[in-house]
Image (tube, rainbow, N blue to C red; front, top):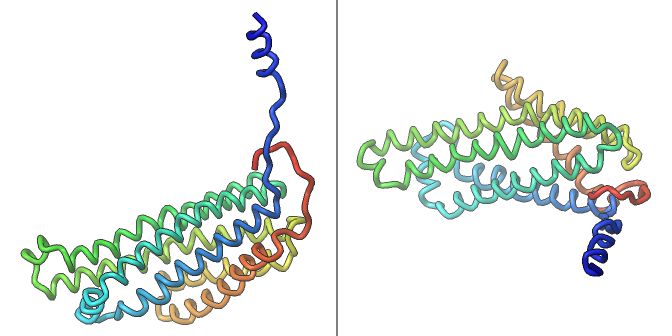
Amino acid sequence: MATTTAESVESHRPRRVRTVSTRTIARVTGLLYVLIFVTAGFSEGFVRATLIVPGDATATAANILASEGLFRLGVVSDLIAFSADAVVAVLLYVLLRPVSRTLALVAAALRLVAHPAIASINTLNQFMALQLLTAPEYQSVFSPEQLHALALLLLTAHGYGYLIGGIFFGLHLFVLGYLLYRSELFPAILGVLVVLAGVGYLTESSVFFLVPTYEPIASTIVLVTAVVGEMVLALYLVVRGVRTQPPATSEVA
C-alpha cells in the first residue's frame, strides 16, 4: 500500500523539463548551415564543375570513369547537405515561431520540400548516370556512345531538378526573411539580405524556364545574392547566435 501511494505521489510530481537556450539552438543552426555550404559547395562547385563538360557526353563520361571515387564522394556530400538542411528547417522553425507560428511552419515546409525532398530524389539522376557508365548489364545492351549520351542526359536532368527545387527554396527564403526582419532575436538587415537571396533563386529558376538565353546572368545573380545573404546569416548564427536571449520557458526546445 505504501509503495502504491509513493508511486502515485511520484506520478503526480511535476517533472523538470530540460531546456536548450535559444542562443545554443541558433549556433547549432549556424554550424549546420556552414556544413551545408561546405558539402553542397564541394559537390556542385568542385566535383560536378570539374567532371561534367556541358554538351560533351564523351568527355564527361571519361572524366567520371577516371575519377569515380570523387564522383561518388560528391553524391555522399550532397546527401550530408540535404540531411543537415532538414534539421536546419526544424531549428529555424523553433527560433522563429514566436513571430508567427503559421509562417514559421510554412517556411519550414518549403525548405523541406526544396532540399531534403526534391534535391534528395534528384540525386538519383546523377547516381544512375554513374550506374550506366559502370554497370556491365548496361554495357552489353547499349553502345558506348549511347551510354555516354544517356549519362549526360541524366546529369542534365539533375541540373534541372536543382532549378525546380530553387523555386521552393526561393519562396522559403522570402518567408524566412520576413520572419527574421520581424524577430527581436535578429537584426533586420539579415531579413533583407535573405529576401534578396530568395529573389536570386526565383530569378534563376524562372529565367531558365522562360527565357533560357539569359540564364548565365540569372546564375550570376543567384550566386551573389545567395552567398551574401545565406552566408551572412550562417556566420551571424555561429558567432552571435541571437541578438537577445529571451527568458527560458517550460516548452521543450
